[in-house]
Image (tube, rainbow, N blue to C red; front, side):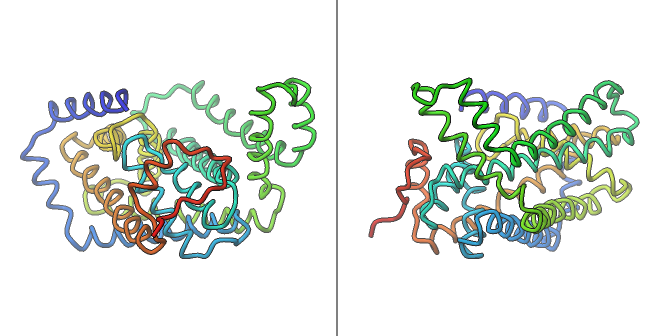
Length: 329
């Protein structure tokens, strides 16, 4: 936790040093209750879309409601120390459908891989349009090359799992300690990528993943229209991409400071002053915290789980264990 706390503290200190409190206060007036509720609704729909995508990759085993609530519970756990959201929701869902949490975790990994790919695509599209970005052509081509190679390799692995595992067994002996630990987990990981070889199911899954991102982009666009209506639509894609990368930086619980800093940096490329950009970041981040907090707590109650029990159990959970984390009544 310490590196994240230090990172957040440094960014918060820098933001405090540069902002003008009067400008920040005036900029916050751009956020009305109506805007906040609208953003909350859009964020809620995005969780539903992500839940539908998850249900497809899990072969429709969980209910729609369980997918929605477990997604929000995972995002809630990401707001807490150690950011255990992906592991936590894998453990919860594994218990609900009677599958290994590690198998469920592989589906989450694939989801996150496509999040990274979509982020890179948005940056590749918008970086040339940002005149002040100062990115070199070499960086742009390297980024594009990594994206293409990554996509090709991922689909090749999914389509040639047997060949890949046979080659891996020649490098790592199955009877060795490393082999006994690594190989079963790699097989689980590949099983979670099986949807890439099923065109129809992959198309449905990808539709819901893109719908999720569509909601996120829509929410950001609505915020931009209220704060900076002069910015073009494509600017939102660039800001969304930088914001997504910023969210991956180690930070204090809930990404405090780091998320706001990412928005300030992204908006700075469009000549937006730090104080106004920070006001925008505070509003967008507040929605991103309140939405999973509310639905996640409701989800824990509906599913008969305790947040504290799930959090403490997840910290020491063996993902290959099928034990279900349930509130023992």
